[in-house]
Amino acid sequence: MDTTRTVNDSLESLALEANHLHRALFGCDAPEELRCQYADAVTSAPLAAVPPVEMARLIADRVDLEALELAMRRRHPRNALTQRFQVVCYLAEARTGNYDRFVSDDRRIFAAWLTLVGHVVRSAYKLAKGHVLLRSHGLR
Image (cartoon, rainbow, N blue to C red):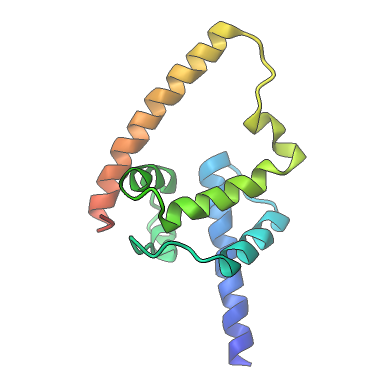
């Protein structure tokens, strides 16, 4: 009985984790199906162990996961947080409702360049913030 409860708690924890990662990437809650698929993927595939990532603590501390992942990816290209983000992104990309998030059919060149510049500035800010978060949470 305790084993079943532990497994269910673990799956619920992973579903909550998927929702936080989805919210960090897309600004909205993850669909229930994506949460379940994420939990299955993370439990069945080995994640990198270095550096150790305590997702529950990071979520509880309301850490900017996107900034932390960007900085962590620069130091350790293969890490558990990046792998988790990739799983959520891959699962989201496969949904037809997310087409506009991954593909732009807009042909306005000037608007595209402005958007690109905006994303470069935002990424630089997130990278700097992520490096601060790495130090403050002891994730070197």
